[in-house]
Image 1: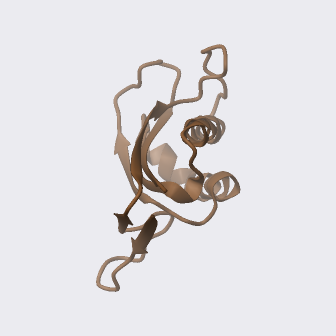
Image 2 (image 1 turned 60 degrees about the vertical axis):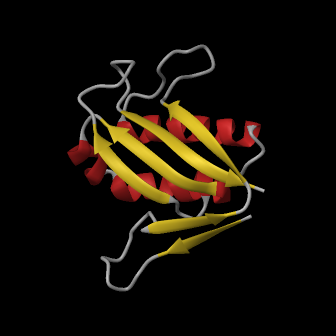
Length: 132
């Protein structure tokens, strides 16, 4: 199995994502949306960076349960209730990503959402991974 991350020179330079990810071989893992829920199902973390860190931790825990690692992520979608706040925190969110998931960026999108399932949640992440 391999994931080839492509960033064509004729596109804007990517920051914190890859423009395209080509997967060959392996099996697909579809990861459900994860928010800042703790192990008891309660929303934890007051601000966006704290909630992003817990949501990403939860997403990676689901991926590990399937036998994967962050490098296996081919696609991640981020749903944010305040895209301007997400942009304002982008450098800090990037540091959190690198700390937890490393520098192998999947194809990503950030989508503005009016609200998430749990009203207190500010961010949700889902993804697709390709495993050996």
